[in-house]
Image (tube, rainbow, N blue to C red; front, top):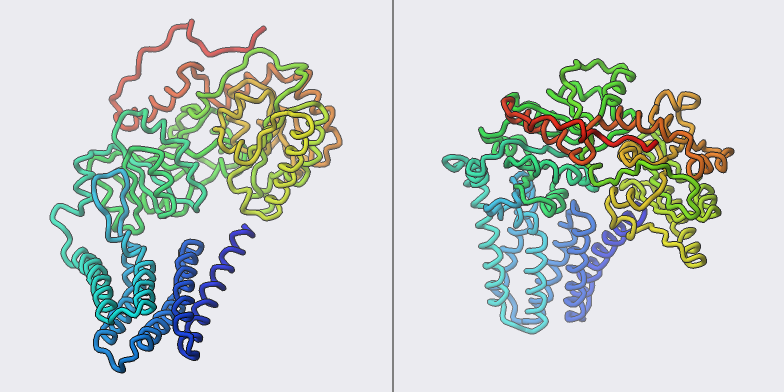
Length: 565
């Protein structure tokens, strides 16, 4: 987070500083060539600033650079009043005046990926600043080379024509909507999607969607993904072959709502969900993006959905425990399909000489009463694990870097593990190496888990292996009451006064092995391990077609695994 701020400030300072310096050198000194060279540097700085700060305006800097380039060009020609250069200046003025409004209009246009249509207008309007910068760079180079002003005029006319075509297209779309809808609408009608996945969240939250995409594809019906933030488009489009659509306005959402759609799935409780919930012809299904005992997993907003898919009966109890009254018929127990790749270990995990421990700290949350992050005392905890000969995999929450203090604490853990790896040769995994693993791969490599209160604990539960949950003290003596999943694991208090005893139970004696299996059924449903994801797929298909018939029931020999006796 702090690194982003430094980069943004550096980009702002470099763009503004070089633009001012370039104008001063061209306008107030005789070093015209040096001034034009500085103009090129300033243009590069403005382009970089737009990459670092996508919302950067840069009009003042661009105006200064344009003025400097035109003055420099005039001095290089040394021919007095030049009609071609005047025409170039007029076109440049028009481009700079129109760039902002056209960019804003383009931002209201729908963007599509994985669909055979060209949504080129918004892509060009988003690059208008770069187009103007490119034109100014051409003019600066032409001036330095002493080329006639007609070259500058020709380049300006070419850029102006391209921008004019974009402006004309935007005006036509407003005044004369195409018969039969937009190209996107027409293509979607041919695609005949039966359901959509709706997503609105800040950048960096795309994992909430990508965890569900493989299972939505396995439903076997055509679907689309509707996004409300443009940053998510390239990330999500790369993870699926389904059409992915960025809809910035309610009007653009209307373009996507073709008659074949019957169901809308959601993965969070984002405020913009209401924009899609207004389509009463759809069945609205909340999937969530994890299952945990956090308050967010019993959000009262869930009541507005037609269906709430939950992993197990514990999720239904969680709403009741939080005082959220939701009719029972809205809940559908579907399991947590993402855990199907997790290997189930039915035998005891005891007295391992060199265990592998997965550590998954969560983030600090939006508010102090939702801060379940153990990073402030994690260094002591990991040191104790290393003293026991453990290999450690550190997998932090994706939002950890949003908090500078958490980022520093995580960095110290990385340093600790790197030093131990160099000294002992133990293959600790952290940073990019740990991030390259899926959660299932991380779970399969580990013998035990230490986690903060998060959805990771529920997913781990599928493995049958022991786990410990950190208690950061936010809930005082009510910790187990508020987070009953921790009762089937071993609790690590913030003060770590019993850390050695807890680690012994976790890695050696494991007295709660039997209790975990009962908890597993309550939290993750009672589905056959080898066909676990079918719970979700069957429920989703039934929402799409109430007359859909599930496969014949499995025989008794295919019952779920139980612990070894």
